[in-house]
Image (cartoon, rainbow, N blue to C red; front, side, top):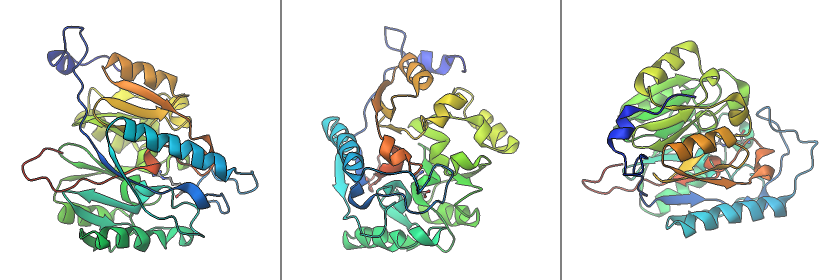
Length: 292
Ligand code: ARG
């Protein structure tokens, strides 16, 4: 675990902790009504293990009501029968300044989710680009204050990164994943605030690790235990950080940085290799003059 940064101390409140403020979010979620694990496209998915769809819905509802209780706006997309992973809305697109880069999925089992999400945005008047290359939305594109961190290695084709940079208008930093358990960037790294992140270094190539160390010397570094319970599949609103309650080291580190961690239980969805962040697509609407 890294030491507290002096930069944070500069912005500290009287109590010695950084002042954290909520930026209200606009999220898109999809109910897991049709959730199941019937194929395996990542090491977490074991189709022979039973799933409990009613429990998945209850856990997801709890996540949704937490967001609403924190003052965030949550919109819903209708789940499509036969697309059991559609609950993972983070994979459906990447939205920056009202521009939508539609997902193009790597596996045949999920391909139809891309057009379903793109249609939702088109119907609401968003500018949508159908990506030329495979990209799994915010699974691999994480937007920080100034740039977009972009995963590759398992799902998103690195050629998509240049397209994302051009279309979304922010610099894209390519990060290569190496551990099949952490197949999407959002399973290995979470954005906490403007340029603050937490991540699990061993999920990345040595080169990408060096990039992360240089860009984010004050990052919270996750232990393997925390990463293995999907502790990095977290959603931050700048103050509250929703993450699996089992990620105890991260929870302590977040408190010490002045964040308010909120433990959630999405054990059913973990059977498909997903947790809070996977179930949450952030819609960054175009707000003239506003910061991200
Ligand atoms: N079963 C899904 C898959 O392997 C899980 C996706 C999780 N989503 C995420 N943003 N990491 O594609």
